[in-house]
Image 1 (cartoon, rainbow, N blue to C red):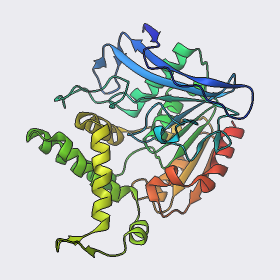
Image 2: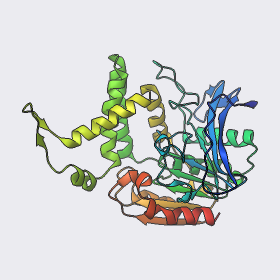
Image 3: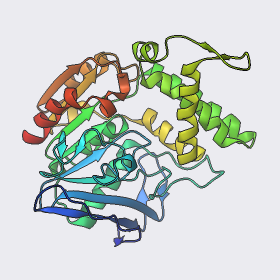
Image 4: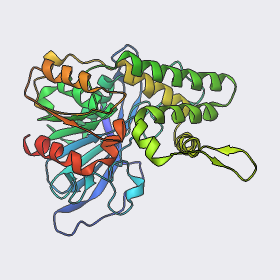
Length: 347
């Protein structure tokens, strides 16, 4: 498989983290002549966008998130431009004064890597194994023989587990937060309804409108009843006599924001990829730290316990409670810091 690095992305601004040895972020793209896909077919050519930032010369940790995550894992100068600012950065759970952090844009997404064209919903399926292969291709191009660890949450945890099965010699340890070895039927059912909303809207010529609704629905599966009850206790009367439901405003505001940043076709591709995820725990011998959130509606505590029991290699299971449910990986810095320490310092 031939590849080359193309520094075609806008260079990231330099940043400082109160000390020597911290390098300016580096980012670019690699271009593969062809990337075979796990379910058949291939991407030819394939472009994968990456960003590497943190302590110069330090061990490299790949940080991967949900399907809306991207290569900018953290940005000390502009935290709002990153997707994991609460846990990754100087002095945080994934301390970028001790580690160098590698992020990628997912294949099939809406950012700098190869994704579906507008109007195309029939592209070859992309799986967590394909994302793992893309990450390995980036490591090859950057001369990273092995990763100190993969810190993955949600879909990113699935990719980390897939890489541990696919190429155990390339990663020393995996931290998988709210991720299991397969999707359960109820979670797939919720996502299938979201995808059909988007497909129906595309047929009507309003893909963005469908994506807005699908994302609003998805938010009800990420958060918990307790969280929404606490934040939105009661409806109010609007000035025009219309009843205003604050939770409705919140959900559709999140839907509007998502639809502005992502294409309907990319959502269909990556949502399906979650439900195609399968790994064989008996083939994973890399040390794994698993984090399960008892209130998570999408990846249940029982599923993560099942995975922990079936893994062939060393495993530590950390069970947490959080009102944020599946979104705990974005919010719970204090609760998750011990899990990062266990995975990163034990690697």
